[in-house]
Length: 186
Length: 296
Image (cartoon, rainbow over all chains, first blue to last red; front, top):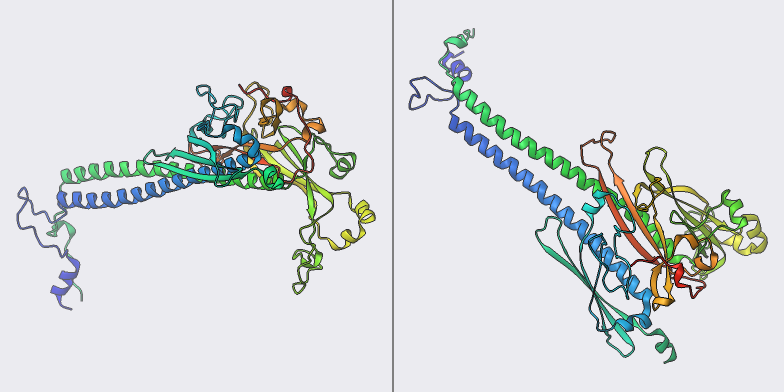
């Protein structure tokens, strides 16, 4: 077998550096090369981490959205439970309902609703982690004239911040409530 | 024959100097340490988030089931009747840990019920399907201690059809022969890992106060207010309940004993919902204002 070929296969293919460094016949890796390699691997690692963080942010946002949707659903049910006769007493009064009650927050518009819509940290003892995980936002509730006589519109609007605090999100719904007694009489 | 390689020592293949090797190792080590720390943080955060979702899903499944039954219920019961006690083998009273409901029985012909042995896929849907038949289901939801996990509770449900089988057959033979009924359910677990909420005044470590009962308060313009727990034994009060509130605080993950033990990654989630009884048979009242919890 050709000795030159064997030599080419067994000995490093790397050519000698053009310049000698420190007078040494160094054919290994330059520190610059090592740094470049590390920077590239660092960029890859950070982009992977960023993807992971982005997916976690999305999951967090989805969790908040789901809770907001549930809350709006519940308020819709509450609105229907109250009925026309009661709701008409609160017509044209914009209300902001309390989501979570803590020792520092006081209930608002108690004539309409005398307890928090979500968690009550005053009348019930919850764990600290629940307090940190709680969904918070601003819920406005507004009763006004409906599309037909003897009907009411109830606008429910919820504003909340992402857990990451990067964006504000909102969800709203308008519920129409009819005066059943009037319709039956009609 | 292949000639022997030259000794490595004599090969013209100089590597890195010791200084370069050390500097490279230090840089690589420090960057790896940063990446490892970030990865570790990500794993903890990911596990926490997963557990939060798990807790949310667990609580939602339980709440959805309770909501469905409450919406269908004709009445909230303060206690079980004698016949019901003999069926369940135990007595139960309405409380913040116990919910007793009476649900109507919808008609479903045995030939239309795919889980029935008389099921006929070719049979037409019986026109009576969905109409209520005589009798009712008693459904109990109860918060009980979880023996496997000290300090945690679980939510279980049991149900029975009333009147009992023999009585039902004697009273309503046609329905007994043709209607498909749900089977009995005994202590089916619908939520685990419940750790709260509890009464702030209670220091004895009693069970979480999961259920609250809401009725129209005539002294406050029919505002829907929470009834005091102490008067729930009274059926005339229970019959007037128009909404049921459910508070659940669910924990997921236990440090050190879990499948994936990550320190500080256990997660607790609180949920509250109020659901309206849409199918009320009768509504008693009006109530005295002293029957309601004083919130302000």
